[in-house]
Length: 234
Image 1 (tube, one colour):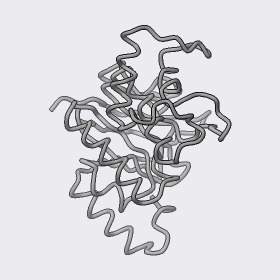
Image 2 (cartoon, helix red, strand yellow; image 1 turned 180 degrees about the vertical axis):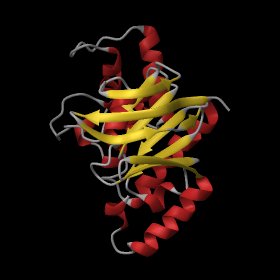
Image 3 (cartoon, helix red, strand yellow; image 1 turned 90 degrees about the horizontal axis):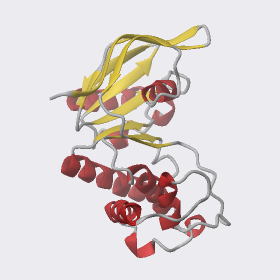
Image 4 (cartoon, one colour; image 1 turned 90 degrees about the vertical axis):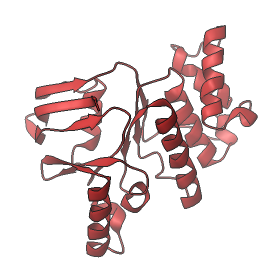
């Protein structure tokens, strides 16, 4: 299987400090990979490097697509946010607040809404829907330009368990149906172990890659080590 992401002796720096050194990983195209590690271990900076927003690195990095959808961890959406779900998703095509889309864009917006099961509530204001529906809208916006690589930064963190499962089930279905490559930054080992094909673990300045079987073993080991507070240790 071809690699979507391939690194060789990649070292990522923040200022003069190396936050992850000699990274040698290859993420297969069409796979779902969990990105794990404590806060400050370099996960987000690695993702910013992948999407071209962080340039302080040495070594070889190859991302075999320019079609990347990214869902950031924090979105400032209050109850009085004025746009509907469909209008919010359509912002992916716009610069500023111009809300008029052509027919091709409208078709892509509908397709993204359909993929995320949002068509029936597309005209509802984003600020007034549930947290699970809002997260689906965030993902729909990232999908609207039909990316080959989708990156999710802790997209389940604010959801209850039922909505976490629903969101990841939908993402995995899209991955399998379309060949989408997914990177999911998360602290929730027990959750992601049931969905991911593999993982990248950021720890102590290095990155370890493993498959689904190794992820399940890691989940057991970490749960035994930190049974009451798993989320803060990965």
